[in-house]
Amino acid sequence: MTYGAALITGASSGIGAAFAHALPRATHLLLTGRNRESLAALAAELTGPGREIRIVIADLATAEGRQAVIGATQAFPVDLVINNAGLGRLGRAVDNTAERGSEMVLVNVLAPVEIARALLPGMLARAERNNRRCGAIFVASAAAFMPIPYFATYAASKTFLLHYTEALAEELSREPVDILALCPGATATQFFTRAGIDRPTFSSIHSAERVAREGLQMLGQKRVHVVGPANYMTTLVSRFLPRGLVTFAAERVMREWK
Image (cartoon, rainbow, N blue to C red; front, side):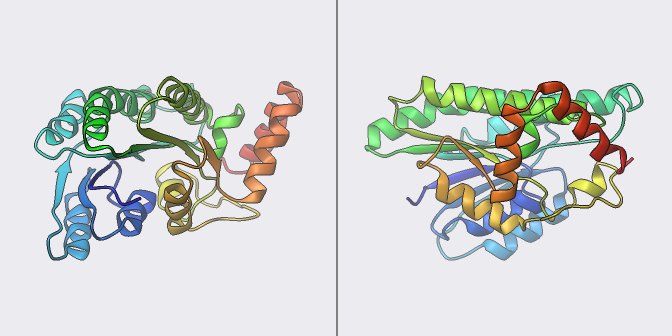
């Protein structure tokens, strides 16, 4: 379906920007992120006749940033929210800075919860009133299905987001809303560079465009979607193998990236 207006967090680049490109030109956009220049360039690229695009420069690791995004929706009511912003950092949890660890939890966990709680009641009321459906996509990760040493906080934060999204979808199963936990694996974005991973090796890596496209296609069809058959098989196997074996194997892989 075509949504009237969408909020996309982490829209400066990568999967967030790909979502902005993938949505129909009839959908108005509220784009948030920390990079003013990138957001302004994206907005200029996507502007068209009758289309409204607004940008909000906000750091979701801060209460002020989260409230700025929520406040912007008061004058820009959305019927699709895409919680895409996320942070990761390679290294032992005790070696990474305390600030970085806190940022991962604030951006990956607290921000989507606060945004969902603030926006969903109004979205549901408008959808009911207009006899339409609204939507919410939470970008989790294939990493959400297993403990990952040297990526412990990131993987755990995505596990929270996966479980939260599945539970939220069940709670609202009788409401006019579609909710999806989107779980990409390795994706060609700036994420790995920012996470401190210089030379990651993957059997397959997907484009941000594919991730965004599949997310929009699966919204309303599934509650959880893992991008790519190889990633799906990995997450499936990890659920049946002993937890200790999964963690041991993950440590051996991640050690090569340190």
